[in-house]
Length: 128
Image (tube, rainbow, N blue to C red; front, side, top):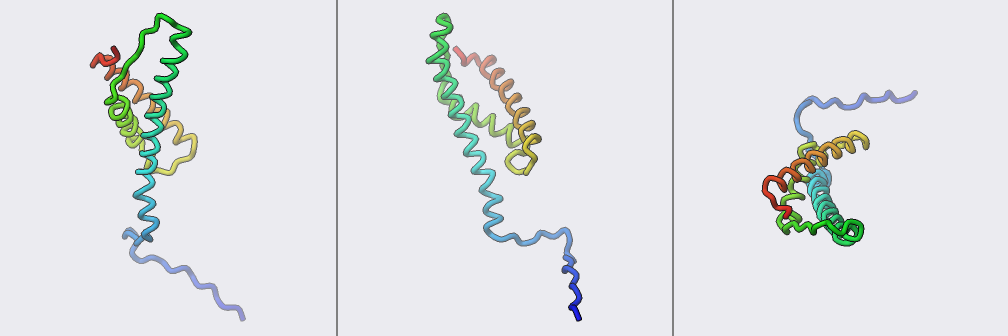
């Protein structure tokens, strides 16, 4: 005679938080922090690469182009913080999304940041 299959235990306390293992809780807390740190360094590297391209290649193509100087405050604080804020506002650090949906939200956040940074540079006239 075969033993009867037991029905899975039903959680009688539905809606209550289940105690997660320490590794899972630590991963949930550290993942957004690590993603934001990687994004910070990526934004700073992108700013430096854009400045290098502008200082190296564009003067050869367009000799009348004036040099563009941004302060270290913008490179290390303002622009990266604005990017990280908009990316976090889209929920990209906490949600698991399909690739194309996440890429769409990231594209939208980047467009908002570009508009905002251009507005900041224009209104504060820091691009001289």
